[in-house]
Structures are given as structure tokens and as C-alpha cells.
Image 1 (cartoon, protein in one colour):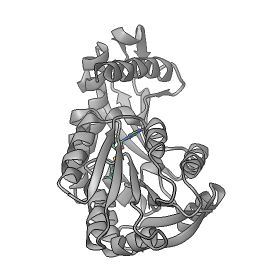
Image 2: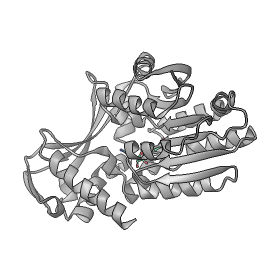
Image 3: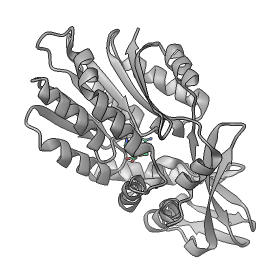
Image 4: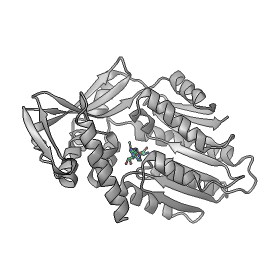
Length: 325
Ligand SMILES: C[S@@+](CC[C@H](N)C(=O)[O-])C[C@H]1O[C@@H](n2cnc3c(N)ncnc32)[C@H](O)[C@@H]1O
């Protein structure tokens, strides 16, 4: 465990060093999720303005038994393998696992999350069930997917979950590349369940990513707290403000941290001193928003056909069940 933690800290330092030298300055969104970041994300999911979680739960509640029926239909008594990429609390996977139980089937679940707090929580949640075995991977999506796919047994169907619009954190070419990686880990007839947020009025999007309670601002600024603690940084947290911007041309919400003054920051473990001009920003996250056709096309180009697509009209959110060709 110590070795793994050391490797992740080394990667963090190297990524921070590289990404703060970019123009504009950037930090990768996967680093938003330390223990406090994961707790703040759970709080965001409960905010009235962030509707993704409730919408996706509504769709899963309504269609979990259908999804499980399709997954197990042709496989006799085989034991399905369900892999969730970026599982967070594991509550959504729990809905599918309960449907598996109702169908009288056993299953194997692999949870992948870069956040140890999220992984521990989801392992606890899923660990309550007797009909599924649970394996956790504290890894990036790509490494975790490779590790989980190695457990695939011939004849057992596999379902990969990429929920919560996690796909929206990738830019368009990277999202397609990632779906192709998922496809490569699957056999023909296996499934991918993709949750993706749809374009909606700008006002609703901005409230979801810049809420009046300031929880999303705390989630974003906590990345600087994390750099100070883990990498020996000297960020003055009060000197950076949260900004959420709707980039209409690119169909994405961008989160930034804006320097409120000209200032210098040093980051010991990255061997770095960074200068900021007043108003200069660090780009910390993108959340792409889609229309239904884009989702279908992306899946088709990655080697899938659509088995089913369900839309939550209230929050404009799509849950798509893809089948590997
Ligand atoms: C937006 S949250 C969504 C959580 C959950 N899927 C849901 O729908 O509520 C993203 C989750 O993915 C994890 N995560 C983000 N980037 C990751 C990466 N590159 N590799 C592995 N996990 C990642 C985070 O720690 C977090 O738990």
C-alpha cells in the first residue's frame, strides 16, 4: 500500500510540474478527489442545483432489471463480471447489484477509483451483499480496467459502467479513445453502460457548477489545499477564486481557479516556483455536455451498437446501454 501511495504521489508531483507549465496553466481533474474532495463531491450530489446524480438514479431504478436481464439472458448460469470506472460511493452500482439479486443471480464486481476514500466507501456499500464478490482497485481508469479485465472468464458476460457523466471529463478525441480502450477489454456481446449529461440552458449549467452555497467552489479550491499538504505547496487559498464558465462553442463547462493578485507560489515536491498574474487562471476540469446523436456516434465509432437509450427529460440526462460488436 505504501508503495502504491508513493507511486501516486510521484505521479501527482510530475503531473503538477508539467501541467502548471502549460499555457493556460492546468491541473488534472482526477486530483480533485482526495478524502475531502470525495466528501465534497458527495455533498455536491445532494445540492438542488446538481441534478446528474438524482437523474441517473431515477433511470437506474426504472431500468436496472432490464439491464440485468439483457446481461444474463444468453449466459445460462454464468457469473457476470461488472466493472465500474470511477465508482465514487458505489450507490448506483448497488441498484444494479440488487437487481442481480432479485433475478436470483450471483455476480463479481470490480470497483475502480483513484480516491481511497471513495473506494473504501463503495467496498463497504457493496460488501453488504452476499451474492456478489467485490474487488477494489485504487487505480486510474486505464490501469484499473486492465487489471479487472484480466479477471474475465470465458463464457461469463461482462458489463462496464461509466456513470455520473465521468466521460465528460475527457475532451472529444480522448473520450473516443477511452471508449475504444473499454471496447478492447470486452468481448463481442458484452456491454457498456454510459451515463452522459445533455446540453441544457446555460443558467442551469452554471448553477450546477457554481452553486449558491459555495460547495463546488470548495471542491475546486481544495485541489490547492491538497497540493499544499501533499507536495509542500505554498498556495494562499484565499487568493484564488472559483470560476465556472460555459464554453458554448466546445459544449463544455470549464472550472478554473483564478488568481486574485499577482503572486508567486512554490511547490517543493515538484521542484517548482510558479508566477501568476492577476486574473490568470488554472483550468482544473472540463465537463462536456452532449446531445443524443453525439453519444450514439461516439459509441458506434468505438465499436458498439446501441442496445437501449433512456433519457431523463426532467434533468436532460442520458443513460445508454451499448453492446460490443
Ligand atoms: C464525478 S465522480 C462520479 C462518481 C460516481 N460514478 C457517480 O456517478 O456518482 C468521479 C469519480 O471518479 C474518480 N476518478 C476521477 N478521475 C479518475 C481517474 N482518472 N481514474 C480513476 N478514478 C477517477 C473520482 O475519484 C470520483 O470518485
